[in-house]
Amino acid sequence: MGEKLASLWYFGGLASAGATCVTHPLDLIKVHLQTQHRGSIGVAGTAVRVISVHGFMALYNGLSASLCRQLMYSATRFAIYDSLRNRAIHDQKKYLLFYEKVYMAAIGGFVGGFLGSPADMVNVRMQNDVKVPVHLRRNYSHVLNGMTRVIQEEGFLTLFSGVTMASVRGALMTVGQASCYYQIKELVLTLTSFSDGLRIHIIASFIAGLCATILCQPLDVIKTRMMSAQDYDGIIHCVSKTAKLGPLAFYKGTVPAAIRLIPHTILTFVFLEQLRINFGIPVESDLGQD
Image (cartoon, rainbow, N blue to C red; front, side, top):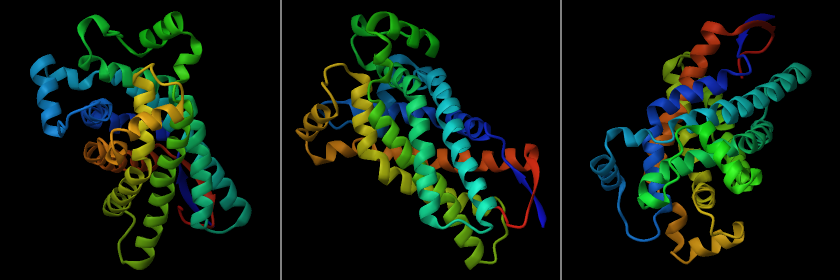
């Protein structure tokens, strides 16, 4: 019987929020690429256009909403995943199989995506605001102002525009990140002589971020389009209109998505491990950290 350090339920939200502070400009560029209806302006061109027209700080439009989303979405999904995983390990007295990690991650991600959807919708609108004509801009000052105005001007349910896609994306994202991260980490530790340190976290989280990008990109495009506009009657309508732009339209923003998500995943798990190591709760266990 050994002792290990367990994460507190909110560590996932804090770790993701910290990573967001670094990667938010890339998220904004990704949203701009996903919502353009014609043309093929790339990552560099989009960044240059935003900075030259609106200034460098425009790259951080929507940061308050993005942080709010992470504190709700990621705190929830990691808390549920860790709770289910720890309970299963304690009850079964064994390491989890990969498929068990997948369904636990999917449950946590789906619930987290649902709860984080309102902040995510405001985030998308704030990031996309600089693209529209001045007289059509919403000019939300921060996430709470955005949520309040949406409720007053469009109704409470508008906050959950695209919630189905956001929830499904949250499930796929957490499968790609959490379950793949822990599985890859376990495999690397088993097959190599590496110690459980920073190198392992970076390798495992890099691959997990790549998996999450591939799984989520089509859903991310649809979610972003539904949240940024009001001219879609539903998911099917949004998918059909996007499909008219060609199959590659579902992968608009893949490069900035990968450039953002992979570092975001790496930073999230590095921060998460540091929070666990420095502020975690000691618990007794006859199994190593999963």
